[in-house]
Amino acid sequence: MSQPRPVSPDDPAPTSERGVTITPYRDGPLIVRGDFRLLDQDGNEIDPGRETIALCRCGKSGIKPFCDGSHKRAGFSAPSAPSRPRPAARILREAQREGDGH
Image (cartoon, rainbow, N blue to C red; front, side, top):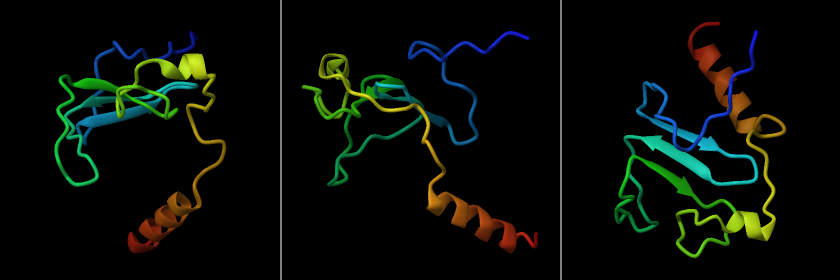
């Protein structure tokens, strides 16, 4: 059985019930695909200009909140997935199970 290939920022958005997919790239940006709204902290809409964008995670971009590739020069390092589950996620799952009668 072949390994699935990594997702590329140029790939079409996967089908999602919520209409948006956010993918953290190892040592790189957050890729946002789909039908989303981008707002500043005051609630003003930021026009992304496209349906797929890269958001900066390293803090070094000159065009924040968008990625400009500065993470490569800065040596930014971050995994694609968390190294361990967030405690809040576990608590939420347990509460949902209790609410469903499980």
